[in-house]
Image 1 (tube, protein in one colour):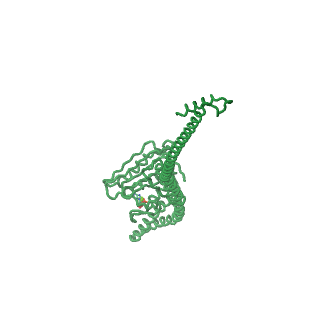
Image 2: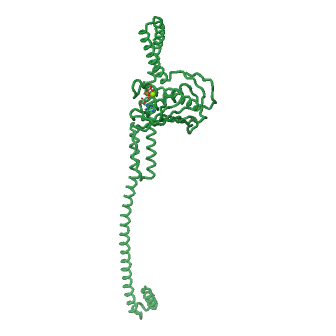
Image 3: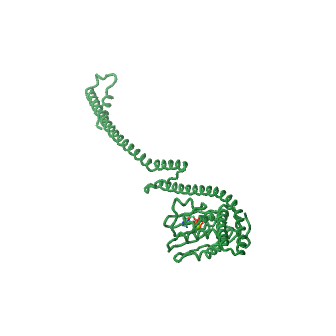
Length: 377
Ligand SMILES: Nc1ncnc2c1ncn2[C@@H]1O[C@H](COP(=O)(O)OP(=O)(O)OP(=O)(O)O)[C@@H](O)[C@H]1O
Ligand SMILES: [Mg+2]
């Protein structure tokens, strides 16, 4: 700036004045004064200039700061909205759904396709809800069937003795009536005999359902059990219905062979009856589960399927949708009882109009096939 040379000149002039002469006697007194005044004016200009600069800077800074604050406010609002819709809202939904589950209502959450990470959490939550609901249903079923089983077992035992007496007396009376050549009495006694046998079958079914029967267990290959079922059922399979079987040879179970055949036979007969209009397909398959401890056997059909409201009742004794000649409603109760007695589980999946699949799990036996069964009550 041009003030530096003036200041230098002012200093030089001032130095040339000696203390004893005094300022008033200095030869460059006027020059000093002029330079001083110039210096003062330049300093004033400088101060003004600096103040102007400072004011300009403060103004720019203030406007930038204002813009930054507005931007930050918008950014915060945007972040809060994003956080709310993407995280807080779904988490709140999960919280409410968890409260509903605790109160016994199993409701699935809507999954928005756009929400990345949260979407997988919601999906996992929905999977958990579904599994919980299924487990709850199975527990409810098991408890219900267990209490029905106690009653069924008591009733069956109470009816069994008088029924045996009726059957024995009837057969004695029948042989006497035969001797007397009394055809009407013989006919009536034969009817009594048939009906007693029918009642006896119902009692046996109830006892099997309530697992009060004695079981003869042996290590036995599943494929042989299924072959037996295939033989027994083949004459009942109408034209147009195919029966597929896929059972690995190495699946050995510790089972009562006769009773397991009976259980699988009941499932196959139901499957045949469910395909009222061929064509259709029934398949019996099996595999080992992931743990390698159980066999998973499925019997599925492409039949009529089961109404959703009936799914919870089909294992109840005497539940049937068939007329009196075609069903007593004991088939699945017997299946349930036989599998349960052998430490297994039975479950059903069905869709009306599409078909039904029964899934049985039974513990695998690590022994070799045994020829002699072991009695277990
Ligand atoms: N594979 C299937 N497809 C469609 N419905 C089925 C199937 N299996 C069972 N059901 C339904 O479950 C009900 C109960 O079956 P369950 O075998 O216990 O008795 P049932 O077949 O009616 O009579 P029963 O077996 O004593 O002769 C059936 O009446 C039917 O409504
Ligand atoms: Mg049946």
